[in-house]
Amino acid sequence: MFTVSERDQLRRDLVNAADTDPRVIGAALTGSAAVGREDRWSDIDFALSVDGEIDVVVTDWTALMYACGAVSHLDVRRGAVLFRVFLMRSTLQVDIAFWPATEFGATGPTFRLLFGEAQEIPHSVQPDRAELIGLAWLYGLHARSSIERGRSWQALYMVNGMRDHVMSLWCLREGVNAVQGRGLDDLADASAFAGTLVLSTHPDELRRAFHVLTGLLVGEISDSELAAAVRALSPGVAAQG
Image 1: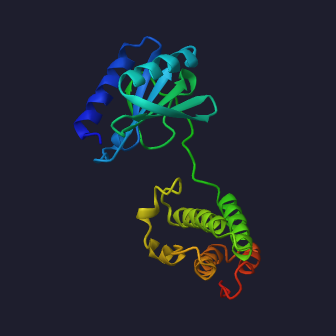
Image 2: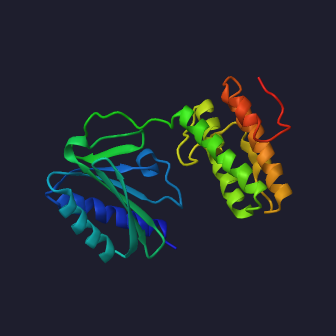
Image 3: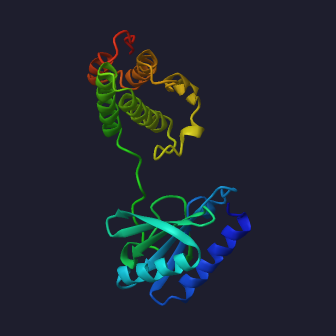
């Protein structure tokens, strides 16, 4: 398990490496450290502005990370930006974002420029409400059919996916971060979802949790024609709105 001092030292080393790499013309801290909210469990989030061929810089920085103790990595792409996520031997996660210099800038409030220049770019937006509703409904359809087919583990997966999207809808309504569960602990009362937790794979328990979850979804979309269709997924869900 990594220590805070180990994390801080590695971050300093990465900042120094960026400052001495002529291909890196800008760098920023992102994530919790950028806004003074870092804690014992925080990872390292680092963004680089690259002038020139990104792939070459990525290769060299990947070699650097493995020399520093990385044991694996995975990639997430957003347009021209590569987010390479490293797992260190100490279990520390290090996210390094490689940005073309022409697109480097803050996509949200957790961005602190260390050196170089940042472009003015639109901030990342919350998930689309209509898409969240549609996905929750689709997960609900598959949860119902999985339960009735006796496919308990698939049903559990679908119920959990449905809950994720309904909880994101609550986050949108209350104006907190609706991405990847980051705002769930900021909800006024997330305890309403306690009854949606599936306690076993018995069909009756799956139906119970699904019934509660369907009622919460209907409450979120009571002003939509879709509410009637969703209500039909779980007979007995009270009409709302």
